[in-house]
Image 1 (cartoon, rainbow, N blue to C red):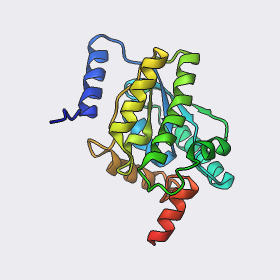
Image 2 (cartoon, rainbow, N blue to C red):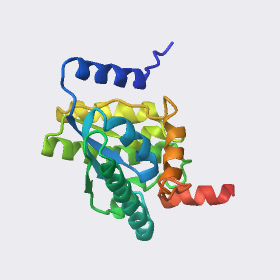
Image 3 (cartoon, helix red, strand yellow):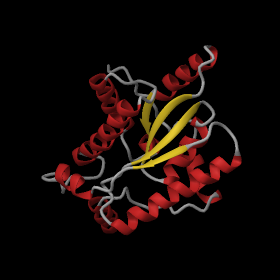
Image 4 (tube, rainbow, N blue to C red):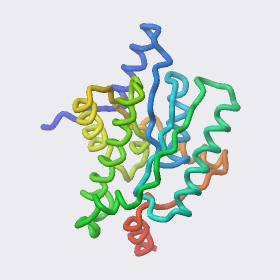
Length: 213
C-alpha cells in the first residue's frame, strides 16, 4: 500500500521546529495564482515567514483577465500590510508570457482539467519560481495552488521537491486546503470583496467550464 503523506502535518512540524529554534521570519517566495487563493495562505503564513508573493501565471490566456487578477493580488497585499499583523508582504509581478504556456500545452489541448496539461503548467510556473528563489536566495519557495480542491497537491509537492533537489534550494511542502483553508479563502474573498473567477485562467479550462454550464 502506498504511503500517503500528510503535507499539512509536515508543514506544521517545519513551523514548530523554526519556532523552537527561534528562526521565524525566514524568507519565503510564494507563487500565487490569484488573490482569492492566496488570501488564506498569506493570512496563515505571514505569522511565520517574510513572504514575497511571486505572481507568475502565463496560463492566463486573456490580457484583460490577467490585469484584473494581478491588480486584485496587489490590492489584497496592500490591505494585509495595512493591518500590521505578522511580517510585511512584498510582491513581484512576473512577465506576462502566454505564448510560453501555449508552447507547453501543445498536443495536450484536449486533456481534461487536472490531467497532463495541468501538470505541465504546474511545472512551468514552479520552475520559474524556483529559478527566482535560487537567484534571490530565498530560504523557501512554495505555491498557493495546493489550496484548490481542483489541484493535485501530491503532484504539486512532487514537482516542487524535484525542482528543489535540482537547484539545491528548499521547497516548503503544503496542502493549504487542509485546516479548512479553502473554506477560509472563500470567507476572506467575501470580506475583501475579491474578484473570484470560476476557472483556472487558461482558455481550455474556460471552455470546459462553459460546456458544463
